[in-house]
Length: 252
Image 1 (spheres, one colour):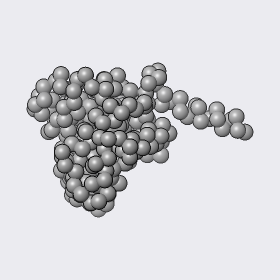
Image 2 (cartoon, one colour):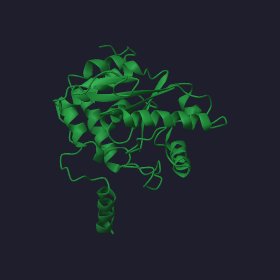
Image 3 (cartoon, helix red, strand yellow):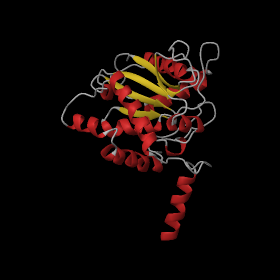
């Protein structure tokens, strides 16, 4: 029975494991880079009046760190290869499927409590995050009833390397956070090293069956614990964490 349990666990984990053996590793340097970006996100999206939604698997380290810092603040939604707009819209059937997916993963009015939404993603052009924002707004505008509530404000923030133009209009995002092209974090984003430890697996609306909130990646919790430990011991985070525990504001 014990051997069978171990085998089932291996099979469960196998759907998340990539060919890259270095996935979900954490160096001190990359953690400081992750923490620096999350500080910027918190300054742009105050937890008192804003919530963060990570698009797909790329923002995994940012979402995990934000969850460690604030409860009921950051979450992720499975959404891959999403580049649809007025000139390339989803079919009616796929739009209905997408909205059902949104209803399972996006916060309703009770959870939002009047807060705006800031969606984040690593981006090369901003096409995916722009499409996600457009369809988020379409979803909320089509919903009725007390569970969805008033139409929320939705802002998009692209995480991009310094190799790309930092102008928000060029990257088709409302805001842009630039990270150094030669940083560990940038290399991890480009190589997809965070995909294996993402909160949820890959979901392409035109191809894949609808995922469930219950289908969380078992590796995500372990990765989140690693990040939480780094928060308590890393020189780049201790001053901020102490200020937060004392009720202070995060400042640069």
